Amino acid sequence: MDQDTSPPICDYEGSTYRSDFWEGQGREYEDLAERIAIRRLLPPAGQNLIEIGAGFGRLATLYQGYERVVLFDYSRSQLEYARQIYGDKGFLYVAGDIYKAPFAPGFFDTVLMVRVLHHMKDPPAALSTIRYMMHKDSIFILEYANKQNLKAILRWLLRQQSWNPFSLEPVEFVELNYDFHPRYVKQMLSDLDFTPGRVLTVSHFRIGFIKRVVPARILAALDSVAQLTGALWQLSPSVFIRSQASSADSTAPEGAFWRCPTCGGFSLAEEEPGCLYCTDCTARWGIHNGIYNFKEPLK
Ligand SMILES: C[S@@+](CC[C@H](N)C(=O)[O-])C[C@H]1O[C@@H](n2cnc3c(N)ncnc32)[C@H](O)[C@@H]1O
Ligand SMILES: [Zn+2]
Image 1 (spheres, helix red, strand yellow):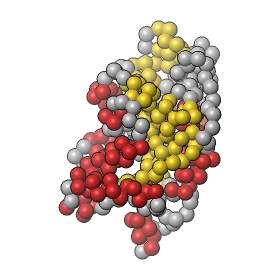
Image 2 (cartoon, rainbow, N blue to C red):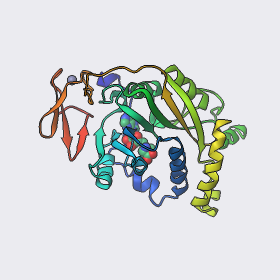
Image 3 (cartoon, rainbow, N blue to C red):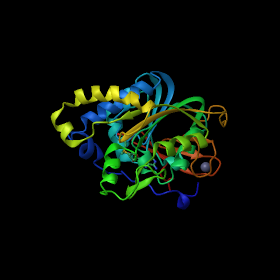
Image 4 (cartoon, rainbow, N blue to C red):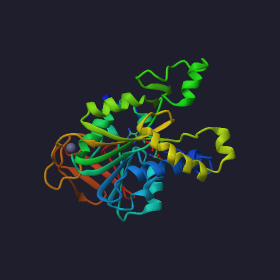
């Protein structure tokens, strides 16, 4: 819980991720393919769902069957954009760091993390926080960037790339951007008390010239079929894996939802408007423009 010992964060505060990476940037195919994979893995309805590193809420339209959806991200500005689109009915916006997530144990039935593990310097720490938030019947859907993809294998064989796509350790190809080996991820999940289940390989056709000549919807339809090969081998740049919790969960006091990132206590209450107060350590956490802010306590 000590701020200084926490791993570094790839900070998207104020970033133009939505307009620079997604909208009009030729990634309609990847977006469609990811939605197909999530629809296959996501229980269509339920009570409490959280997306970790939800960004500007690109995928939130998929969560309509859930009673309460928490969009959690380190970047307040990304969440502000999401809130403008989805409003407050059924949605809760929480800013914070996954390594110090402000939620009581065992609360969420469904947890998703898409395009976020690749920013994690300490993946086991991030995933154990997620495990803590789940109960024994919860589902966890994880997307990760696959180092053992065909392009990386080819580049390695042609000696255009120094790192070995078949070795198990993560590769940091740009600062705070990592690719992972499927066996490393599966082993990590098992070690952290998850039971890894269905695997889908995604974005098989993420190749510039193919994307230029074949319409995104056709590529996504082809990808939809190719995704099923994930059960046999994983050679695509993106992989989705669904896991369940393996054993019993930690318990929180009845009705607890928040957990104070400073002291780990569960006694947080909105004693005055615009602020959650921790009666255990006296930390105060701000609520501003409908976003709960656990990035740092109020002064
Ligand atoms: C590549 S974006 C993906 C956004 C969204 N999942 C999507 O697929 O459109 C990565 C997101 O992870 C968030 N993130 C990175 N490190 C984080 C951390 N330690 N805790 C919470 N969120 C984090 C960033 O703020 C950013 O919004
Ligand atoms: Zn506290």
